[in-house]
Structure formats: C-alpha cells, structure tokens
Length: 475
Image (cartoon, rainbow, N blue to C red; front, top):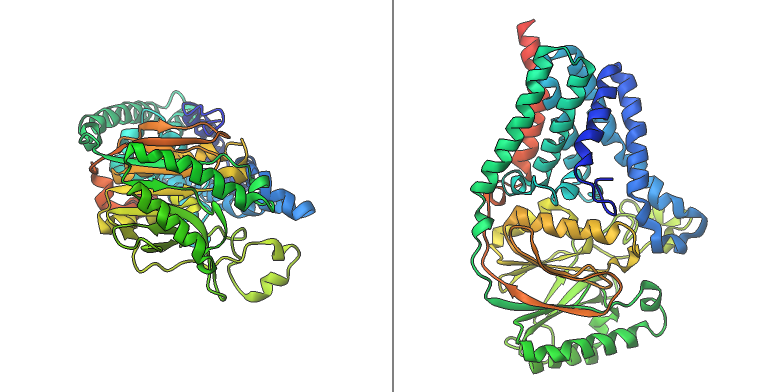
C-alpha cells in the first residue's frame, strides 16, 4: 500500500515490523521459505500492471508476464528473511535491525541491477515521496530502502520482547536517529537552494492509446497530432522539445522524407527536437531517440540515441537463440540493445522508458556532467494501473539522486518537469493530449551524485557481515 495507487508511504515501516517479527521468530530455513512466500505475494501484486496491455498479445500465457518475474524476484525477500533469522540467533541483539535492513536493501540493489534486473517495486522509489526524501541526495534510493526497513525492523524486533531493555533502547535510538539524520540532511541539502531556472524546455504528450497507436491509422494520427501540438510552441521559444518513446511507429532509417520533415519542424521552431521512433539497419532493430538540431543539420538528424537497457523478455529475448522457439516467444520484441558512442548531447542526456528505473545507469551518465535528464517513455502500455505513477516516481528519485533537472515526456502521461529537489514544477494527468512548457536550470548535486550506488551496496554488505564476524571473533 506504500506504492501507487494508494501511496501510503507511512505504512511501509509498520509492514516491515510485521515481517521482521515473523522472520526473527523462525529458524533460518523456515524464515527463508516464509520470506520467499511473502516476496512472491508482494511481487505478484506489484507486477500486476505488466500485462495490462501486453497480456492481450500472449493470451493464455499472460500470467507469465506477472508470475514469471515474481518467482525470481521473491528470492530477495528470502535472502533478507534468512539473514534476519540468522542474526536473531547469532548476533548481538542491537545489531539485528541493522542486519535485516541492510540485507533487504542489498537484495533490492542486486535484483535491480544488470541486464536481467527488474527494478520495479523498489521501496526507495515509493519512499521518495515521504519526508525521508532528502536522504536520497546522500544515500540514494537504496539508502531510503535501508532507512525505511530499519525503522520497521527496530519496531518488530522490540515487539518480540517488549520488556528487553536493550531492544527498547535500540528501537528508540534508531527512530530518533533517523529523525535527526533526516532533519540534518534537509538542512544541508544542496537542492534546497538550486539556482533559478533559465532555460525553457517543452514536452509533448499526445494522449494516444496503445491500441490506436498500434493500429493501421496510428502512424498518420501520431504525425498529425504531434506536429499540430508542437507548432504553437514557437511562441514559447523552447530550446528543446521532447516527444515520447516510439511515438513514430515506423523505421526512420528508411524514411528520409520523415526525417527531413522533422528537421524542418525543428528549424522552423529554432529548437532541438527529440523524436522517439524505430531504427532498423536490416540486421538490428533499435528503440531510438532521433535528435534534430538545426544548428548542426537542417535537413536530417544531428545525433541519435539508442536505448541501451532493454526490458528482458518483453523487448528482446536475452540468452541463446533457441529460446525463440518456445511458445509465444515469437511475440516478444526483437530489439537489439544500443551502444552509443555519445550518450550526452549538448549537456543533455536521455533515458528511454525502462532505463529511468535504473539508478546505476543515471549515475553513470554523470561522468559527462549533464545539466538535464530527458525521459521519453510509452507508459500507455500500463493503462491507468499503478505503472505510470510508479514510473513517474522513479523520475523524482533520479532528480534527487543526481541533483539534476528532469524533463519527462510520456505518450499518455505522466509528463512534466522535475526540479533537483524532486518537486514537479509541471505535471500532467493521464490520458489527455497536452503540452508541458517550463524552465530548467543548473544542477544542485548532493554527495550521492559523487558516490553512486556501488559504495552504498558495499556498505550494506558490510553491515550484514560485520555483526557475524564480531560474534565469531568473540567466540
């Protein structure tokens, strides 16, 4: 319930109090089984929006879109439960909440990384809308996860033995410490004092449903609507205009007349236009953002960004070619991951859809010191489920973690502009055709922008291992 659509962020620590109470009461192997069961339930509910539209394509196999990833991701809960139970039996009582929280955050980071990662239902993403938000500028989304679970673990561990003075003192110290730490983080948060924005940008949300977009008339409708909605922006003088992911449903490599049309549109407006479409050289089909910059090329693209992190078993089939012979595998996309020589163009770096869920990808782009992140996405796949809202929360977290402005364009919403402190200065609703126009400015990064996720992961691993090592040393 901490996730959309309820967004009751405050309930998460109390939910973890119950989980930790249960896990620490059981033997390690039993706790792992119970943890796996609770994780399976959590992810099955949380991934339900995967098949909102795509499920219709695979018919009887639709449950695989939901249950398949849940079967793998539930291992994260099993690991946290096992570590919690083991710590309850072998470690100092004061260390148990820390081991539980670190184990859960570490497992979340592992499952949310690499090509096969599924970074959905991250607790830190949900908690970025809570008062804990400033901590993300110092410890990232996984730090938010750790702190949230720590609050719940301290409460659950104490409730198991409420007369235990050490547990009571530990619980009180953790809750007070988190409150003071959050207040301190807020006080010294660089993004609280970001410079006034000076650069005008725009995002176009066409509001075309997925069923219409994929129809025979979808391309003509997209061309007409997005052009008609973009032309009036001339009066606003934006320096950049962003269209959503794959809004042009054709191979733009083999459509020079369309590229010339978009180049002319950008030249007429005197702006840089980012257009989502397909790029197919005959051997590779790629999900691309085409960049039309009249200062560089008034007749064709100036640059190209290819989506690097594809959705496994949705946009492509990772692994050996024989997997394509499995039932319904022919309905899975045949995209190829991109390899971009240049990921940041004119101080702007793009993320296409799924990529914005990966904090390590966004942090990696900081090596180019961009001032603005673009997120182009086609959330029409998810209808009015929690999907578009959770995906928008990821944009909030990326802004806070990197200390950068974010411009987001989604086919049916949610589109908008996010400031470095996570505030949406412009935000649309779902399923309307609308345009976002606003200003962005200079970065205001916190320590996490320099640290990144790797040190946080190592710290979590150390917190898990250290209490056991100390106990072994004493014995």
